[in-house]
Length: 137
Image 1 (tube, rainbow, N blue to C red):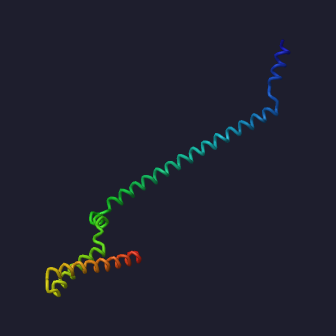
Image 2: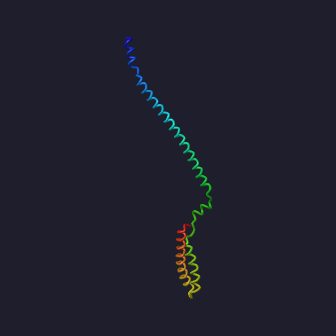
Image 3: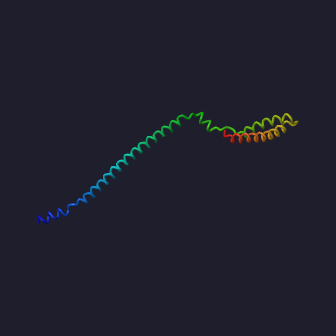
């Protein structure tokens, strides 16, 4: 009985080669755990850096919004009259005055002169607008 128990103990005992392989496996597992822990730490650092960047961007957005003045907003919203519209109004006025002064029938001359002046003024204003767009202003 004693001999059989001893032989079982010797037979169940891992060989030196098996022990070496088990140690190598354990070292591999341990190194993988260390690398995983390092990766998790790197991810925490990246996450905290992203949080800092997001907070700075939020502060910057708030500052930009707070720095805008009502006058600047009005300038952005109010573009004013186009050159063609200004030219049409000025031309109509000058044409009406000239037509009334030149014509024997003052009312008819003012209407005809105003229409002609508006057409010429609108055309001139449109040309000026297109040249400004070409220059990028």
